[in-house]
Image (cartoon, one colour):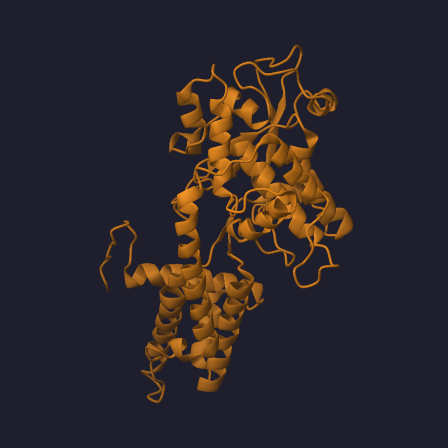
Amino acid sequence: MPHARYGVNGKDNSTNAQSRIGRMLVQSLLTELNLGAYKPWVEKVASGTEPDMEQSIRAVLSRLLEKVKKEEAFTLPGEGREIRLSHITHEIPTALRNSINEVRADESKACLHIRALAHGFIQGLPAWKEAKERMEKRMADGKAEQGKEAEQAREVLLYDYEQISLFESILACAVNESRDEKQPRKAIDSLTLGVIVAVYMALRQRGMNIDHLMHGYLDMDRFKKIEVWDGVKPLYMTMKTPAKHDKANGAKHLLEMMHHRCPLRCPIAMLGLYFAYQFLQKKETLPTMEDWLSETMHKRPFIRLQSGAGASVTSFNGTVRENLALIGGPSRFTFKCLRNMGIAEAGEDWNMDRSKIVAGVSHAVHDTKYRSFDAAMLLTGAGYTGSNPEDQGAYSKAVDQVGPSHPL
């Protein structure tokens, strides 16, 4: 039994660890293909003829290739997981080979012609080769892009009028598809972009990852004690999401965002449009309260592709730059800039303690167990001066007035 080998990043690189991860990833592919549970599937594949076994593995790898082409994430219980090169080159081949050989080892005692699956068998299949090549190219392109981003991520900001123009262009679906100048961008793509931009502008969390955020982790609450405005304890939305470098099954971070002063830029209103399009326009099944509180909605991605699979925020960097080009905005902009922009805007409030800003845009163990709630930063993300908020916006004031005393 191989011992655990830990890399410099603390990752367990042992064969057992790779097999465990690989089995989990293959199970997600089997689920999407409606092929049942991993163990019975492996037993059937390993016990079949060589052509049948190859055909079964090809089907799984073809589904993997399809996800790589569409830049979809693996759909795992309670989260999504971005596809990485190591998943293709190590974890999935290791899991399949070890699992099949374990079954065949038992059967070979009674039937001598059954042979172990050779190293390199899976790597020789066309779908595996193409998936690997595509991921290598994506990684190379990503590193080049990161190098460019690193030089300018802290420099590029959007002024207030640019932020308004950006949301106007998103909501107007003003960008045309490059393949057909007369065909506007798909509405779901524009709405997804709107949700990403609005949520990042509101939260501004360093390393915060909404790729893995699920619908079931959204909730509404309101201030418990303090009246921010006379007679008003404002509503806010809560969510739980992993952050960069968190463990796959680690505790999620608790975050909050309010209705924005400007309804055009409101993340909660944008999310409402997103839901309305999916449930009313696309006629997706409206979840019942029972569904919403069940595991079903805890597996439904917050931001999704047309196919229903989870979307990657990074893949929308080019999309937001198309809108910025339309309004004459900066061409080097990425979503990383929104976090730095939020810090700069909070820092313009001379009464705001710097420690509050630092705490408000970082993530720590504390806020996986307790709320990282900070009223000043919450208000700043909603367009107010955090230390001394202006009069409540008419839109959010109306929402608070018609909302129940306790939304839960």
